Image (spheres, rainbow, N blue to C red):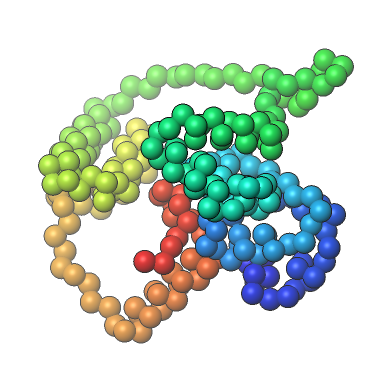
Length: 240
């Protein structure tokens, strides 16, 4: 669909009775070609299906409201004036308006909802959770404790140098490695364990050729144009 943003393709030339966006939160950034292409579709009715209309911030919802053409909040001026800025200032009016907006435009389906005849709207089998405590053997416990101690030391270093937020992805990876070690030692690569135990990375800077740099720039620009998200924070990629 992103190709339609700059071309008069068949999707844009067609008058649609109804347009339904599945996984609609994928258009949450107004700067992407995907959002622009979807918004340019000529349709009588517009629907958005999403389990996460707000992924990280309230402005994620602004893009969906803009696609729905829900006035006046499809206009960025009125959105910021009535919702965006009041919420940032933690003013009660911002919350009140968002609740009123969602009550007016959103339909929420839950597992407990029933049809008119009393039957469940969706018949699902019961969910049963089984917990099985596992005791690590001596080797597994020693490796896990070693990794946990190193992770705590590394996090403390990040806190002391005010680098925690910048290295948040590193912290998430350490947590993942600890979980992997609980499952099986083979899931946590030994080279990662050695790197973590050695402390901060002291490798010299890598020198890239101009061709390599240009290739990386083109790959990143393509990801930005297609609306891809950061795998860590789930925000859309942006030009610096």
